[in-house]
Amino acid sequence: MSASHVREQLYNGGLAPGTQKTYRSALTVWNMFAAQHNLTTFVPTTTQLTCFLEYCFFEGILPDQVKKIWAAATSLFRSSGYISLWNQYHSATLPDLPKIIVPWAVSLLVAHGIEEQWRALIATLWLMGARRHTNKTFEPESLVFEASTHTLIVDLHTKKRGDRSQVSKIITRILDPLTFEFMSLPLLDAVDPRSTFTLSPATVLNALNDDDSILMVHDYFIRAGLSRETARRYEHWHVFRRGLAQSAFSLRVPDDLIAGLLSIDIASLKSYQSVVTPTRLQIIA
Image (cartoon, rainbow, N blue to C red):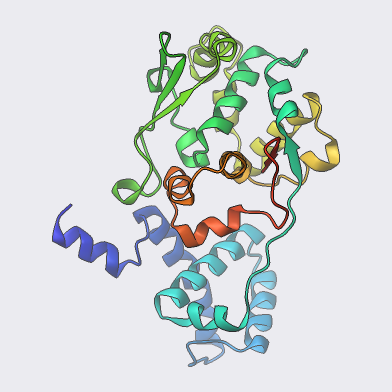
C-alpha cells in the first residue's frame, strides 16, 4: 500500500469509495436545507434537526435516505472530533437481543419441507458472517470442499472495505462429517445461476432488495421452527454477522479474533454483544 493511498484513506476518514459517494450524495440534502434556512453553525440545534426532518418529509425523501444522511453526518462529526465528546456524556446502552439456541440452528439443516439448497445457503451465510455486499458475489468457483479435513473454504472475491479489511480473503470453516457431506452438493447448486434447480436461492435473493430478501429469509427461519415473533425482530442482513459474533462470544473466542472476522475494530465489537451473557448453547443474532 503506497503512502499516497494511505494519505487518501486518512483524508476520506477511512471510508470505502462507494461509501464516500453515498455520503456525499446524502449530505447534499442537508446542504440544501441549510442554505434555504441560512444556517451557519456546523453543529445544528435540536430545533434545527426537527425542522430538517420535517423538510425531508415534505420533500418526499424516503426513510432509507434519511438513514444515509444520518450516517454521513455521524461520520463527518466523528472525523471532526464531536462524537468522542458526545460519548463522554451519553454512554450507549446495549439492547437485550432475542436469542436463537443452537439446537434450533442445527434443526435448519434437517428441516423437512425446505429445499436442501436453501438450507445449505442459509447455514453457510451464518457460518461466514460476511456482509450482504459480499454474499452477493458467491458462486461455485468461490467454494472449495476439502474432503480429507471436512473443511469448507470460501474465497471472498470482493470485500466492502477493500484492502483496509482485516478479513482474510480466504475463509475456512471446519465442519462435522455429516454437515460436510450434506452441504457439499446442495451448496454448489444454491449459488450457481446456471443450476438445474429452478432459480438458485442465491439468484433469487440477489434479485431482491435488502428488505424483501431478508423477509424471505425470515420465512425459512419460521419454517425451521423459530417463532414468528422472534424471526420478525431480525430486520437486517446483519443477523448473519451477529450470529457468527455471538457464537464466537459464547465459545470464548478472543475479542481481537472476532473483530478480525467481522472487519471491525475492538471498540465497535461492543455493539455485537448483549446485556445478557449468552450461554454456550445460545446464539444471539
